[in-house]
Image 1 (tube, helix red, strand yellow):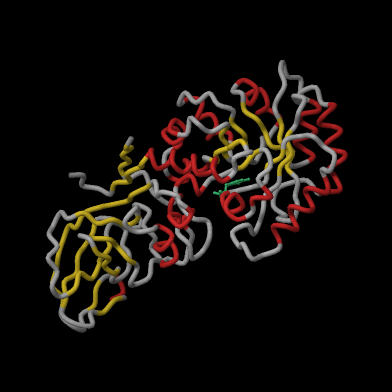
Image 2 (cartoon, rainbow, N blue to C red; image 1 turned 90 degrees about the vertical axis):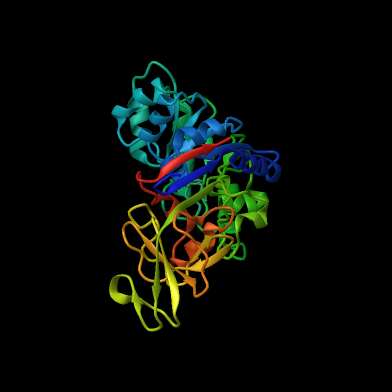
Length: 359
Ligand SMILES: *Cc1c(COP(=O)(O)O)cnc(C)c1O
């Protein structure tokens, strides 16, 4: 029995979710997004399990190099591109593809003396106003990239949606129209769709889709869980009951006396806290799965522990397993109870958590 919180990673579920992406976007290649330690699931292990993906994407060069060190040979795209010209030889040596989203990057490529050519994805800002060139810059960038000796012929064109997780919003279709009009007549491969757009906007799939969250079995939509989209949760975060105590009606539990017992009851202490990545802002009542039922969080989350109300007739025993999220309890619900999103919960898991990979 592990004495610390365990994140079990179900690699079969991961593969199932990739197959689901292919089912949803049968004409598209899959650029699996593995940034931030594969959304907290473990970069190299996830990449190995996703051997059926066509390519991988990460945010930063260190993540890409960690994949190469881990023996991953598939194409890797740097979603933020390179930051300085000095990195270009490293990109070439490690077969990393780069996004280009600004003039400085373009100039660095134009001035580079490389003994090889890099694959480039030109990022266009179609309305999110984060990364990407302005539509008015497109013709100039397009022409200069094609002329650039450091760039492989056959650039790719991409954009990113700001609101694809709001299926009722017309922003996604507006962005799609901006992008489509801008590149009309161009034969280059295109990529726009994140998980939400893969699920809600099939017209945006194009040649490459870029799923991240859904590969881990999680819904990008508020108020929906992944299983509603035939996805399977990949992570199961669990820990153990390490103390039980009787509290009387009116007594308070935890820091700040933040929770007060309405009746005589038993409080259970579980060995997981914000020092493991459990959200400190989880409200009283946030569900925890224990012995076949949900029990409510009772009191503030501590660094190493949480307290739950087991009820007056609790039969639970020391050492019993509690699930913080996983197949028994959707992470989407826990995130909602902590006023955050599943992405953040996953990224916040700390190295103190033990990872177990299940085939
Ligand atoms: C993170 C990211 C994705 C994946 O988004 P999900 O919502 O996790 O599917 C796709 N494209 C870009 C540019 C990203 O930064």
